[in-house]
Image 1 (cartoon, rainbow, N blue to C red):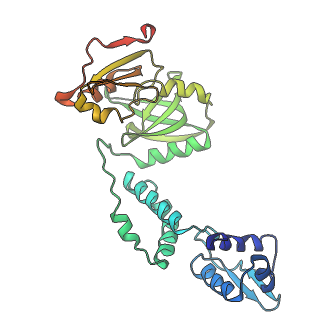
Image 2 (tube, helix red, strand yellow; image 1 turned 90 degrees about the horizontal axis):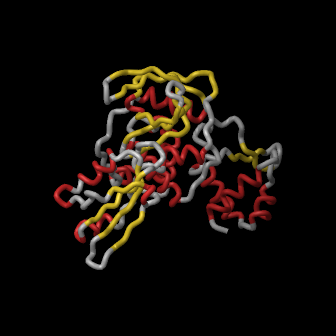
Image 3 (cartoon, helix red, strand yellow; image 1 turned 90 degrees about the vertical axis):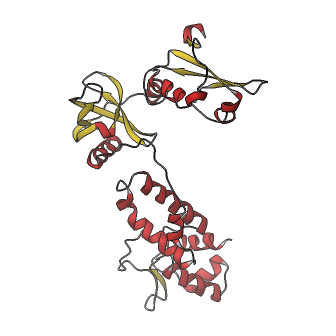
Length: 309
């Protein structure tokens, strides 16, 4: 039995028992007295488990009086701690101020555990870098209101800015899912004003207020068909396919990229690469094509209808 598995076993020993004699612990875990003493020190000092010896009861008990707000009984191996801290640092850089404050109690506990193992958590934070491109400022109050309503299955009254015409429209939505796409947050929702599924950029929602009304539930398969079959963030069921021809030079990169879950790719003998993918709205697709600059793929007269595919 590994050390971490053995330490987890102590919690099982105390489940449903007010007191556990020392000999019962030694027998059930098949350990020596010296090992038990080392485990006891780790349980108390490193894992924050409030285990104490009660002379009157003649055994060990879990104290209910000790202030143990730092997630009692939540124990991790060194690899698990490193993985969690890596994720936490990525979240903090991904959206500063969004989840960082809420994760501070967990981060402090993880930092303490790693420090006791001789690892420098500050160095870990300095070794992780998240680069943003095209990220827009996010109103945290709107995001928190929408995120909470999405999980609680509530409708939300929002003020949404239409960037195409500059108008702010009030409407009620039933949020279905939050989407993080290309450094920005979106909410896929049923719009009660337009009576259809739409995707709203959260940074364009200037005000959001959760309503006591239950959200309209949509079939998950239908939602995926509407919101994910098109290209990029634009919703709508795909109706056309684009066929793009990349030179051998660009193919070295593009053949390893995923532009769409249902894409089809063909690598030719001369090193060139043909990419075929469905779309409903070509605006983002054209933008991705043009980002290749002078080496943009040949796509003229290669866009064809799904009916002809």
